[in-house]
Length: 164
Image (cartoon, rainbow, N blue to C red; front, side, top):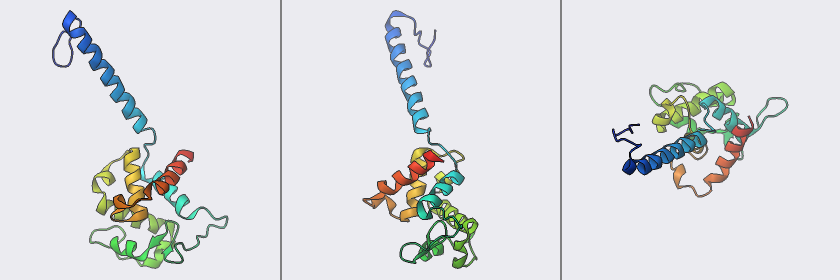
C-alpha cells in the first residue's frame, strides 16, 4: 500500500510511520468533527443573540436595554447603528428608530459583521470559533478581544444555540 508521499507503507521500515500517519489523520478528523458540532448559519446565531439580548416577551414587545440606551430585539446602541451606516451597507439610510423592528436590527448586525468580520461573514457554515467571534463582535463592538469578561456572554449564546 502506498502512502501520500509514495512510500510503501507495508514495508518493514515504513509500517510504523504509516500507522502514526493514520493515527494523526484520524485525530485531525475527530478534532474537525468536534469543532464543527456547533456549526450553524448566521440566521441561527441571530436568533440566539435575540434570545440572549432581549428574551421573548409574551406580547412580542422588547424593553429597551442598557438603561434605555439600546433598542430593539438585538439591543442596538446608537453608535453601533451609526457604524453600520457606511457606503454600500444594506442598513444604510434607514432611521435608528427602525432598530425596534427585528428585520432591520438583523440588517444592522449583518452590516457590522460584513464590515469588521468579512472573512467570517462570507462563509456559509460557521465553526464554533466563528460564531464566538461574531457574537462577541455584536455584543462588545470593536476591541472585543481585549474585554476580560467576554466568556460569560459567549457561554449564554452558545447555550442558547445548543438548545434551539
